[in-house]
Image (cartoon, rainbow, N blue to C red):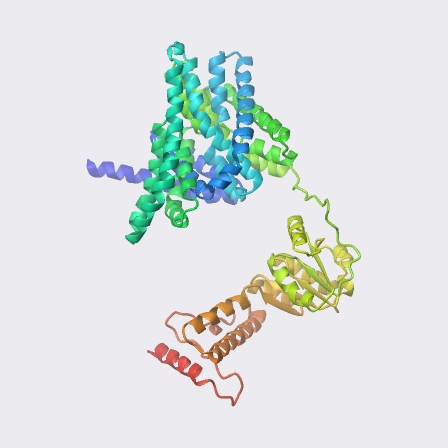
Length: 611
């Protein structure tokens, strides 16, 4: 019997892993994102799909730890000074948005005939955005550290804090809830605040010394266990204080953001975070009661649309009133228009207090889950319906009538360094780039960079490419560099073109395009590092120079072979560390003796390979 139970549990574990492994790549491949993939996988294997799982709530409780760990990692990136700098967004923007959206959503319930208390609970629950979905979307889009991303994070933090007064209001609005005195309510709030203060004090004075002691033990598994203990212990401390577990983990992360163990903690937590966060989304999919949705589909569909639109309108109004642009306000409205996981807590409390019925709780839960499912789709629709954001060229000069003897296209880190020898020799250099932020930053360092797209022939003429003595293509994208090079050599064949190559494939394409010189961006820096390593290990300067010259010779020969035979040609010219024979370098010139030390090193290598 025990073996049968274990086998059943193993089947469920395998089903979970298989569903995620199959669904997520498919959904990402077709452009729907990983979140929607996890949600769909959960629906398929849940109680209303294949029926492999029937207790989705139990899985959801475990999977919430993924959200907890996610917030801990976010906290590690948020130093206290940085968090303090967001105080106006948290308690200004956050309070304004939550308050206005709660009022609008409550009005939806009242207008459609529901009692005030039930309307408020339903609306307030929908106001609490899904931290897991929004954080994952921000991370996938690379917006977590941007100003607009930080404003969204600020609102999410305020919503996590708002769960405490909302639960107190639920108790107050309950039938017979007036018996609860102000003393009990204030006591609950005081316990929550005390939990936060206690966690901050412990984090400030205990965590770093404890991790220092553990690090001295040199037991990696103990450090991993300690990292998990900090995350889960902090979450439990704030949960006992009536706050959200995610808030506790976030505070712990903030307290450790300046620690020397920050990166180690992040590396230890990351695998657990990724797996559990995926499990959370799958558990949300399993929790979708398709029977309720089917039975009351008109009601569910109406309130999903009404709540999401009304919440989006409130978010957009707040964003615009507080100075955000139209595009940022629209993006924030769509990203945060769904309900979230904390609504389940609020609805459960309202059900226990008799404010809403069992059926109403099931319908509201379905509304929240459907809105979470629709969010990734809404973002895809937004991207396709809204044009790409145009950069403001205010204060930026557009390339026109430039006459420099050298034209540099692209002024990132590579172009900046390449410009220095030319400028130090007094060359007249014209520079163009199509990144407004880069142009503005370069101006702060004394560079005059013009706005222009090097893939356009008219811009190349305006930038003076036709009369330049040389053109340097320093853009960071290989395909863009190839297009620019082809255009330059086609239209201005007599102008020397020197190009930056991203990799060997780009190098081969640039050579075929006819550039006069190309350089892989990491080649010389990597050679310098390898040579310095030889020098550190005791090799003399002459030996290092000979070895580096041999590497350059081999690379040049391999490149010639690749031009004719493709990327796989010339593999034998690369020296690998596998125990197989490899060609040795001949002397640099016929008749010239090799440096004895170099010859000795190569002879030893050959002997080892023969053995």
